[in-house]
Image (cartoon, rainbow, N blue to C red; front, side):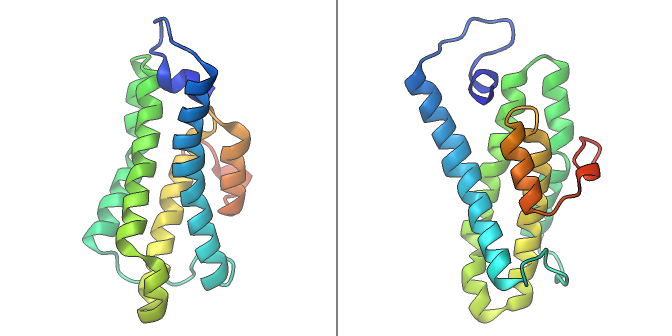
Length: 164
């Protein structure tokens, strides 16, 4: 599903090969999304009492920017779907994950653990919120995996719809 929706424009012929599908899924799903989820969940588990950080500090401009991008992700994705541009829907999700990977690499919460626990908790909270938005929108494409991510983030079943 993910490969076809990301690589084939609606109503057009597509080019499919096993190798291309494996490369696309490994790149976007395993390396980018999967690695981000693993990093965030592991850091939260080890450093935040195995739960969403209870206390977070003030958001920086960088925090606000990525949160704003995550909060408008559904709208951007809906615009693509309304134009039957499913590949652009997928592109929005992939771009958001890439943005989150840049954010975690810049913020380095593993380093903040040594110097500023409150800031570390804030960064991890922001990343969990971004992942929540992404996973909700990934449900039509990778339902089992998206729901596993939402389970890891402790998102209740009744808060997994597009309206959340």
